[in-house]
Image (tube, rainbow, N blue to C red; front, side, top):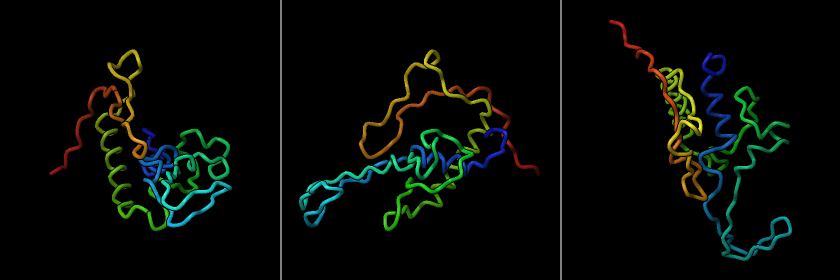
Length: 152
């Protein structure tokens, strides 16, 4: 990626497919008794719909769907929701992610994940069954590149 052969948009889309920020809908409650794939669910019972695994479905994303690969032909993902629950801010979210990644790696071109021997703490997930994020992600920044200043 740092060779700029692949656009940051490919990184964003592959990240959302492979491990999006939200992998489960908040609880839903049926208005009447229903049956889903042979399982009876009574009116008012809580349903937690987990859609995070859809991004790793080999039928949709190929035999290597469990691997992170920005060169993958994107077959779509549920990282921003779907249908009436599709993220209204999707274009802004994509723009923010692409801009942040491009800016970070322009400023710190040698940044890398810290190895267990180099870090004081391990990547720690946020304790949530809805949100999918990290409290900490130790990195080594390396020397900063000179900032791009506008010419006069």
